[in-house]
Image (cartoon, rainbow, N blue to C red; front, side, top):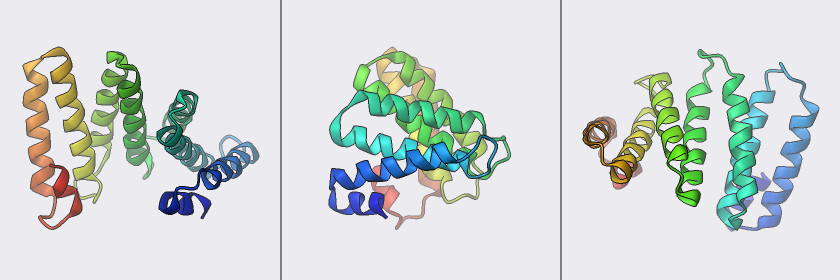
Amino acid sequence: MLHNRYSRIGIIGDLEEAIQITQEAVRATPKGHPNRLSHLNNLGGKLSDKYLSTGAICDLDEAIRLTQEAVGATPNDHPNRALWLNNLGTRLNDRYLRTGSIRYLEDAVRVFQEAAAATPKHSPNYASVLHNLGARLGDRYLRIGAISDLEEAIQTIREAIKITPKDHRDMLYS
């Protein structure tokens, strides 16, 4: 609830308390417990939000590390794997935007490709994952100039638009 209130009102103290509580949940949950991976991903999300609010790169780095840990321990057939991959791709892209290091953009593209492959085509999240992938491919085209990235970005964004309902809010981002 604290994270929800932070999202609505923006009180950083709420976010910091939510982070502290989630850190305690991670510490209290043994490796191999079914809830641990969710706790890791959730903590990564809260730290990512804190980074977006404060600009503290250490929060983003920890968010990436935690999300990588969650994804790395998640079986390929786990229902949340695709979502967590998408989260990781977003965090890696934030790192790219902050540092300008092509390595992070390359990592984001690779992770979004994996997220797209892991997301069922009938999932309500599929269009969003495709949009994220297409946007990052477009960024990579702008950075290194490979026409194959531009072509794949266009194809991927077109597919995202095609499967997004015309009245859906995500249509605005296309």
